[in-house]
Length: 246
Ligand code: FPP
Image 1 (cartoon, rainbow, N blue to C red):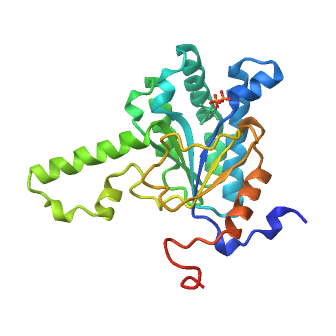
Image 2 (spheres, rainbow, N blue to C red):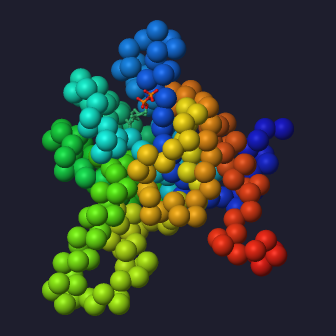
Image 3 (cartoon, rainbow, N blue to C red):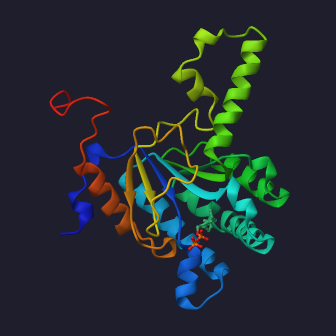
């Protein structure tokens, strides 16, 4: 029996976040340039999106480009941005046919104009789609997001719009890029690295972590199924005792 048949459809994670890692190492192993790894990485993106849509997971967030990734060689940044633009053009029809909405989080104003334009168009055209929301984290950093939130709230306090005692978790949530999304239930990272790398720092407070040695270009739906099956075997206690949650 395949793993998917063991997945309990009533206990699915509502929000899956993925740190897609290992494109460069995949390319090196094949004796190819890093660009080839990124190109093949788009197939991993397709597998993850299709896998979540088929199961009925409503939110998938992918770490596509971090604030730290701006430190990579310009040539590689250009390759990643061009790949983003060409993938958006190529996949719009599939997103529409499958009722998938595209969103972004991050400081997207810093992306090349061409990428901003293409993103705006796909987001606009898919905004009423309901089955799955795919969010691309682009020029995203968790600390930057928290800083932005602090600045926005400070201005409201300074202008007497809110008082310091009104600052609570729900107010902070409302100022994050993810204000209209649930917290992350399951965080997956590929390529054997076991780090969070500044991804969704606030939103992963109670997330389950799943690490796999699979390199991102090799990621298939079956790997997503493995992660979800593993997630469902865990007991999420949110600080309570095992007896309390039975
Ligand atoms: C990590 O591999 C991956 C990235 C920095 C970017 C993810 C990009 C893609 C999957 C390609 C296209 C994406 C979209 C949304 C069109 P790495 O380069 O860090 O690998 P390494 O650690 O082995 O060097």
